[in-house]
Image 1 (cartoon, helix red, strand yellow):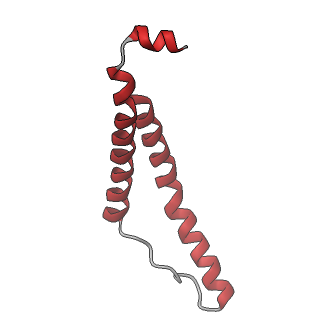
Image 2 (cartoon, rainbow, N blue to C red; image 1 turned 45 degrees about the vertical axis):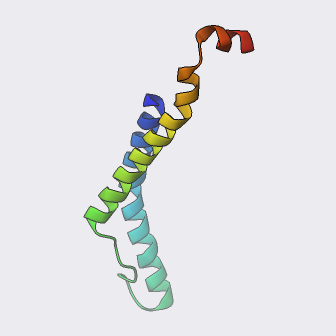
Length: 83
């Protein structure tokens, strides 16, 4: 569960840092190509982006916790016997 949460945090940090500049650049390019000019897209608010990123981390950690419940309840002997 900790490993999944760590991967989620790293992904959110990298994705969150790259998403807004990429989105802004792409929308400026599309607006220029369409003849509208830069500023074609609406950039989401910072609070919205942070809330979404925190939700992704919480959802990943909770789903990893759900997946870890069954192995945590089984005995070591049963797990080794199944190998």
